[in-house]
Length: 299
Image (cartoon, rainbow, N blue to C red; front, top):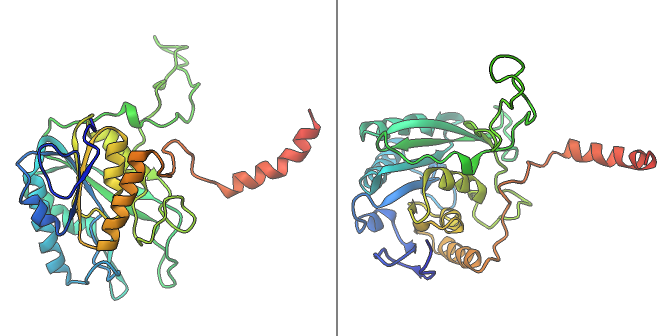
């Protein structure tokens, strides 16, 4: 539970929210073993964006391995790591980062439970290959005894009234009345252009993406840690659901953004896209506008 609502700059036993101004490796050195229940992040993709220094892939992977190893040390036996990545692009050829990062986790003894595909509609348009419209979330657990809460993240059934038509359950509903498993293909808008959560950060997590992971992979009061915090989305998702949140960020302007957004969340004023809102379909909206006038006349 979030009892101490102050944002601490360093980890201590009484803190519930930690925003560390610096390299996550420095913060991780101060964390006791098996502290985090969920590590969730979108690390720099080594694409040469304004907030990252482009590295040779081998050096990039070595740096990632250093962070991942410490995250595993700090992970609870029932905990999970969710590493969300896209592609490394080298002279027009792509290298899926999840495929080259997987051996690092595997060699540390973690087990891959899902390779979740996050699909979105907006992004850069390519002229010499098909435009990328998905990224992946590698979900690893430390042991076989891991937290997994499906009910809080169920989605509406496609056919909620479907019933068994024969057998001993004939006439009974054939689907879970609480909703269905969301599966491993998640259609969630990314934070671009007119998205209500948009800040100046070029690669910002949507809060609802992390909420789904927080609700399913942690319990109330657990720690959620993001080693590459950005604008604070992982902590926002954590405290929204009565978890504790920690993260590190090296860029001062993003630190300021993270603190500001977390403070807004604590005050109840942060505007985000609700988890339950369907993805906007302009064709459906256009059809409803077209049908509405004559439908009104039929009343």
